[in-house]
Image (cartoon, rainbow, N blue to C red; front, side, top):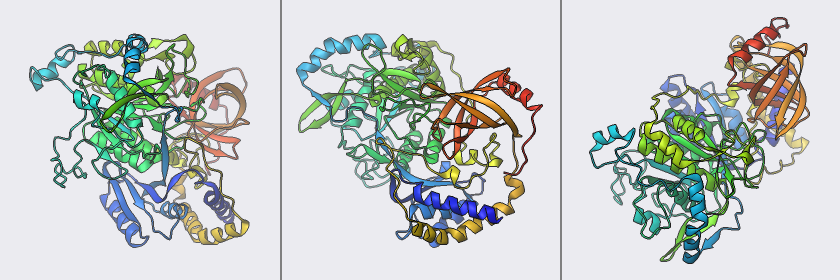
Length: 637
């Protein structure tokens, strides 16, 4: 017992000193309540948080049981999290992390003259359009799967998909968006009356919402969102024509990134939640960060449950997402399409992230010409580069597919886009499909595709739950109160250096944290039989393992195995939340299995707990055969 108190107290020291060196919003936390079905427990928590802890509820995402709080001005984020985690009704609590837009060459946005636009339209743009199949004109309002829908809506009507662009906003006065009629309008809201007419929690959200100013004014003070939105439209119309054709889709602008291209996780969650609940069919996310957020993961899972298609920029660090994930692109939710950037000659752009397991599809992302915010009465165009430019074209194609098959779910859209893409040898072993998008082929396939009303089951399980013994995780996935809760790095520029901390301050922190540590240990002890329950029995093993890390094969050893995962040691530096491919040898070295897994805890950057992902039945059978002759581990965590 004393030993446990000492170890946990030491973890508190390390947690306080180093856990939140990365970027987050000061004075704010995000809390996820347990899904107990007891609404009273959530209400009691809110009352206690406000009355006893001086916390202020800023946003509630009730259907996800996720809540955004401002903490007491005299409290710290670290201390608030330590206290809130002791509440039995809390599933997890985390800082309000900061994320960034995913554009490369930030200082090289090129504003293009009308003469140059015309020249590019007749040359480079034409060649690019022919290669990837856009714009897809007049998709046929009564063709293929759309016939039944149009009979219901009326002979002259078509299904108009809505694409939510979660970004820096949108210049809704730009000629392209005005002339094409592309801006989404909230039919339940009366403009300018200061009333929440449709009861969705937003006043005068006529065209979307601005989470920076908390208003319906969609001003784009950075330019990124306007550029991205124009690329979405490029899938269906020639945005450089004069005049521009009517848009076959609507853009729902949701501004959560400020004039620097930065925004908070809570605002991203709010935007996703808004998009889903207000009828968006596709969500584009040209932003990200390297830190894993459980609450953002939950929000994306919510969009999956509602059948939405979800595109995400893979990132612009030129690194392998298999070993160093970027979120939201690297979450394992089945409908996410992680998009790499390709050049005009179909090579992977030098800045683009890649990853055979975690980056899915290529799309043009180098010097892409699109709309740019107006200056005075002059509305222009610019070129920009990045996976930010690659992802929205895929989102636009997803929308065009929905015109043909309005009841298609996001997962099926993803499957068709991947299946109809064009193999490119230069992308071989760089991304999952080894291919670049082919929009025309994907839309054509959608016209006659059999609509699948179901999609694979997906249950969001927080990493924190994965790291506890009663989660049913595999070997090494034991309850580590603070080790598993340490947030990973985040941000376009990487994490900030940990702030130095003196031993005297550590002693003060230790004395301050001691009551909570003891309470936590007592609570853990009181629930010992429940905590130590395991879904998979663990077995000690001495075996070798080969891992693919950042495109390189490294060696390691496995000391424990179960049907759910392994504990392994390696000299390679792995990051919690990352996905690795492993080739594990049998105890006698005569057989091998290949399996992917997610890093769910780490110890001293050398020993890791890995939860298996998408294990094939043959692999599970092989593991069971191996463990028949092995010694089970003791049940004590």
